[in-house]
Image (cartoon, rainbow, N blue to C red; front, side, top):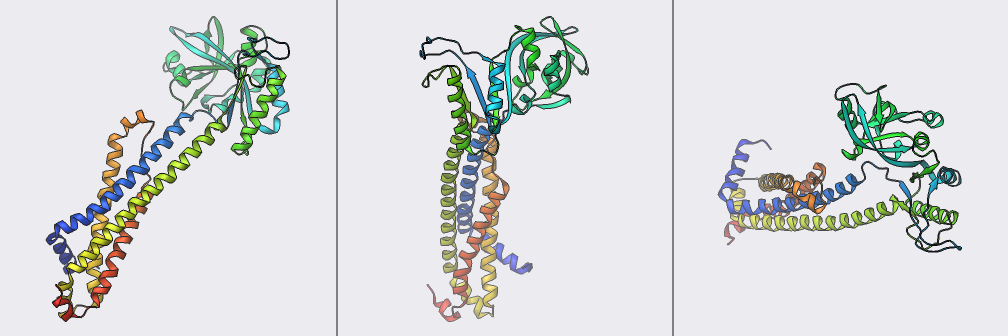
Length: 409
């Protein structure tokens, strides 16, 4: 295998037949190039979907209220639906087996100041479970807890960008921030993969906000996560039942789509999974078709190469070359060309994805890339095909009698 004369002879053969070698290599390189680009684009599309919901739980359900658009049970259209703490308790108790985490939410805008620093931020008043719905990562201190809820403490958890804006390099834990004239103690700092906007938010206990901003038990929204053991159909059935029961609770018409809206991530995730599965199958079919085309191409070229070298094979046999030596030289040449061409095809495909990747965000394709193992597997498939394609005609040619080979035209 490491015979110097053998390798010198192989490279001389490749150099002597440059057109043939380039044609063989181009077939393999082009197949790997297309294979890499196709699967890279498919992965980029999947990355877009993943990043869109990176900061939210995949099994989240959002319950929002509005105004009725239809009269029902003697009640006029245009009636405002307002959730209260009792509705949170009702959902939590009556649907307990189907719920993993649940929180109510209040939304406010506040002016925050600390020493000489001042800025405006979004305030969200929540239950402790909200941390898991938003995938909030506490980097300092702690999150809101049940004791904060029970005692209505004036504690807050701030986003990392709020910390940078107001405290600069100072440690914020235990310090007090003035929120629209009321001091609150910072007990935690969090980060969120959702981006800068998510880290410019301040969280406080829901009960504290209800006491300070209205002294009532109203909430703006109720969010929850369904039982993670549910499949998509079970999760969708749960949310439909939840919506039906809430409409009955508030005397809302069944076909009123605006008064109470229940958005279940399962519906969206199911559609996305179906679409990506179909897309994956299509790309797999196209990719395999590309590989098959490459296999057919390299096979045809190898058959032509062996046919072209029939006289050479006859001379080798006449000079005492064994069938094994004849097969080896043809196989090694085939594997060498396929391997080098496959590698260049891989580099070209990755280069195309890297070069055009940033501009593809316009088409909802984020960070298009392909796993190295997948492309290497495709390359080895072509190498194996090239080996087989070279072996079959080489084996046949090695059995030809020298006198017959020398007479071949």
